[in-house]
Length: 117
Image 1 (tube, rainbow, N blue to C red):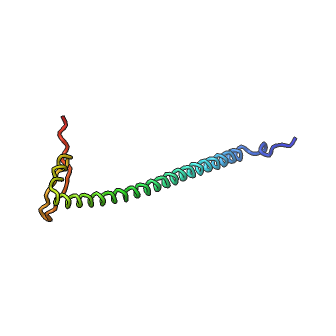
Image 2: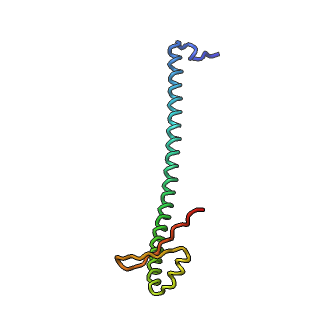
Image 3: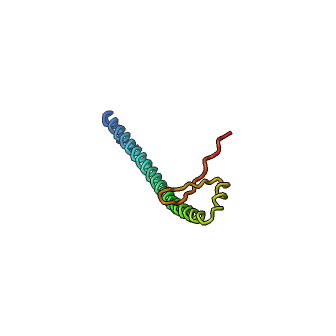
């Protein structure tokens, strides 16, 4: 039988070989951890970017609704100036009419909530 070349090694070289293998194994483990963490961070970033795009689109929709609602209130104010009966209907529905003195326009504002009983 052929002898194993490691059998004739001095103990110091054997220890150095085992130490080199341990260092190499540790470096491979650290590399795997770094790659795993990098993938996790990249995945989170891409999910957050997608969510940010969706929220941006929702924000645009909310701004459009706000513009539409302000236009509706302005139209309702103009209409109420020509038809005073609507002010009574709005008061019954929970809206108060406030007079603006600087432009003479009326604005509608929600009434405060009734006190809790």
